[in-house]
Amino acid sequence: MDPQQLSRELREGTSPDLQRRRQIIGLSMLGATMGQLVSLYQTGIIKHLPDPPVSIFDADKVDSSEYAYKRLDTPDGLMMVTTYALTAWLAGAGGEDRAKTQPLLPIAMGAKLLLDIATNVKLASEEWQENKALCEYCQLASLASLASFAIALPEITTAVQTLMGDSK
Image (cartoon, rainbow, N blue to C red; front, top):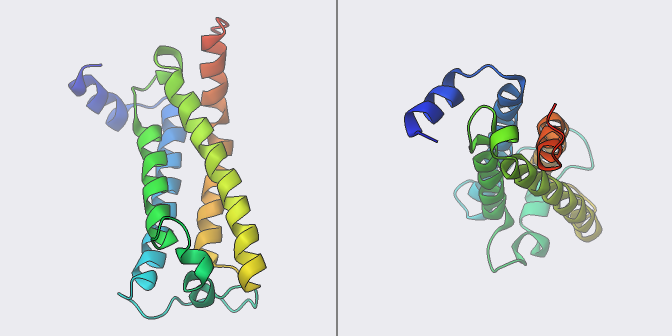
């Protein structure tokens, strides 16, 4: 696609799919922001992550535990930032009508969102098992992934229909 056309479509387009993609980008930025906050704590830039007054949440305990540093020799908050940036990239890729012109893009985005949800469920389980506490920042990011998938379903459905030759 011509870069000028892509720029115009992404900034000025009004299709329902594009409006939903913008919501997914916003939710991905929320997830990335949660990852940034956790990363600031995990790397010593800030010394405390505030918690709501609910006993199951203890971000400092969870985000300083072995659980939070055991993958790839890095703090998991930095991985959160990366994964949510990738989701935003997939949501932003392609023109306004990509479900019909580039159906693999919304399908890839949907697969990435499903992977995020499955990973988040597994990590929340590990988080609780090891710490008997949850990080509210991580759980908010998980909710953003779940909402993103629900928002993405209409475009994913159109993309699958397009690939199957059922263009309505």
